[in-house]
Amino acid sequence: MQTHVRLLPSYLVQRFQGWRATTFAENHIWYRRLAEEGQRPRAMVISCCDSRVHVTSIFGADQGEFFIHRNIANLVPPYNPDGDYHGTSAAVEYAVNTLKVAHLIVLGHSHCGGVQGCHAMCTGKAPELERETSFVGKWLGILRPGFDRVADMPDEAERITALERESVVISLENLMTFPFVREALEGDRMTLHGLWTDIGEGQLLQYDPATSGFVVV
Image (cartoon, rainbow, N blue to C red; front, side, top):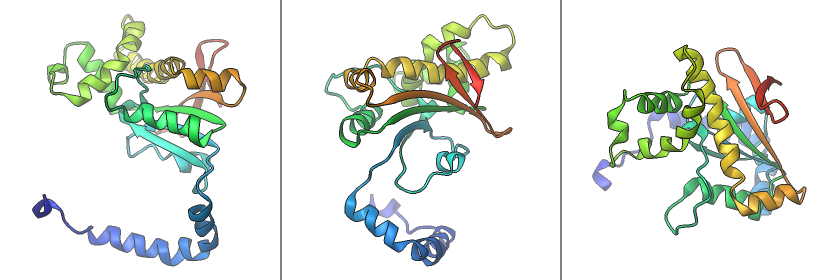
């Protein structure tokens, strides 16, 4: 393994050194307090791995304010305590039970490659994702119920956008299958939110349970 590991690219080293000499140096007392007192994030955000989704920038969040978990297509699987590896479920458990976040947010986005992959898989255009060896295909299978809800939409572009928002709704529904999430919500110790952001337009929509749709923030 060691023969394949390399030192950081010089541009990343330079960026780090610049950050340490400016932002860190100017706020070193705050960073030391974060290190010594531990994290107390106000919210957990489950977002997509997509590099274009910059959660802290969207909300102007400071370091230590958000507990962020990222995965392909911002999906949450159903509660399944089978003793296997469950990274997303573990992150949710830690945020709710240990960090006791006040808000749990699922953030979807436009032009999501994961959602497009799910659409291709569900329409028979991505057989490679249906192989038993595909981690991505197995993961995107979480979104299949969402595809079934939008499959009859005639326009493909509109269907994919609708499926992006279904990725948020499916995740919200699956979060409700976690006993500790339900307990926190029913005990009024936490709130649950669904968001979708349009990358190109800088727009943010939130899920409104009263209408079962998304409205502009």
